[in-house]
Image (cartoon, rainbow, N blue to C red):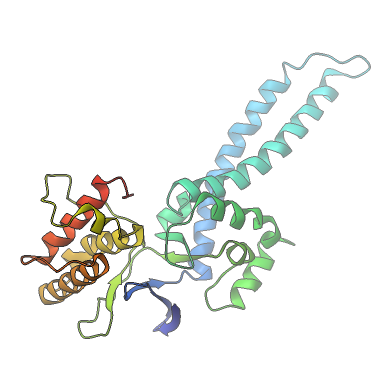
Length: 280
């Protein structure tokens, strides 16, 4: 379940996971997305120039066709190739970057924005494909007019491509901190994506393999997000959250919570999940 609220000048989306963990995101506004788009267009334009001169060089090698001048023949090749590669580059740039760069393009990374699913999870290739296939419709009739009007008319600032793919664009970082006294654990997700955490070293296994198998990638996401933000949390809040999350994981596995530091328990769970090949 997700809820939407306005805090100050920013729109915040709260997503409640089945584990009773609340992931919070600041929804990206039209202004920040427009700046990110401008940066992306600068990058694309630079590639366009390289592409154009490359096609010109190729066209100069085109053999003469009887009844036509070399210039006429070359001009048709240049035009056809330029139109084809222009579409391929424009569409492919956004789709491939978002699919394989964890929901970001160059512009989005500079502006600290990211595309995620409505559920708060990382988008897949198919979501990236779907949202960018409709980019041409959002652009109509010019300057993304359809997209801007659509974004203004909904609270999550979604364009048509976002509705089709079930995605939204959020800010990567937030300033708010988790609340200590609340009914559910709150994790402020800078990306809602798995983070690299320091359990590359040997970590003891605290739970049997069949118990670990009851957890899924969303559970690992929760643990990773906690470790990514724990140094920013007050010690009391950090300890409370670690204990609460560890307890939820133990309950889901049908196991008693081991004694000891709950952060080490979470570390062990993540280590075992990755060791079983079920991690990210």
